[in-house]
Length: 421
Image (cartoon, rainbow, N blue to C red; front, side, top):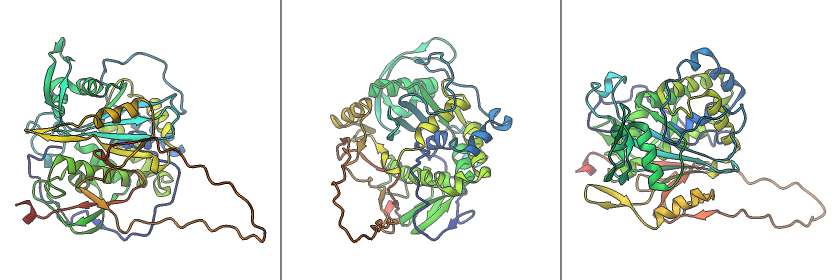
């Protein structure tokens, strides 16, 4: 999100440092898989408590009017159960200050840019999912988009993707990504600053690992090496920071956001969250009250059906990837054929396997918990067994595609003010 303003320095207020006590209770459920916001749309609704909570009047009335997408069609609302087939959902994070906390500046201090643009794909058989990020400074072709006030806007051959929200609203961002990827995207959601703050607080904070000290005067983020439990304002500023990590670019900020999302997934799927009706209710409320949804998604039942489709996906089969790009004057552009190969794999519903690094913004966590190997049962008679069948890796992506899975533990590669020059 935009970092033109310099909010107050976060300091240590509301920041907790926690000791690592090993892996969260293991579960085969990966009930959230889309950005620090996207994941919650799906995950929050998977448990007896969450379905009951979100069905209450207080949560239901917080759902805002839906945004009509060009490719939407009327159809029956699915029953509570896994949605049939696969899902493509676009999630955007807006930098608009309208209706937001005064800490982010006056409501007219920025436009309405989609500084976060992510595509959630769930496979037809609900065995894997991916969350694919598009850099805000990526030049794309924007098709003719409906004007919310009537008529339509002209197409443009080359503009940054983060201008699409201000150009034609959420529907225009969806049309642009559809043109760019060749995919049909019937679901979409737009979130603002307050949504991130509410969700991180609803789960009691999200643990993040910092490898080298982060110093960013623009977002007021100053964190020492180690593990920190972030929520509310501090969690949001951690997601917005870029000057204080990696090479200071938006590309490394995406790496950092993927670290946060992976930790959010593990936090939400943990027993401590899903067994606590207060947390589940707060998370459900945070999602519905702070997101603007497409008409196709603006239903508790639809949200729940997508969540059910996600609930049995293993963490290692939830892939966070950043589209491959190269530098051009004033921004970045897609690297071919790696870019088209990525979305050909998504269109073919193939599981994605990363071969590249996590990116310059993060490094592997040296203290990542290691699962103990199962102890074989004692027996006096050797038993002949067949070699276990190995699962096909799906499509191995180009090493120019950076990212990680929800099961990977990573740390932020921070940098100090001195290193920023």
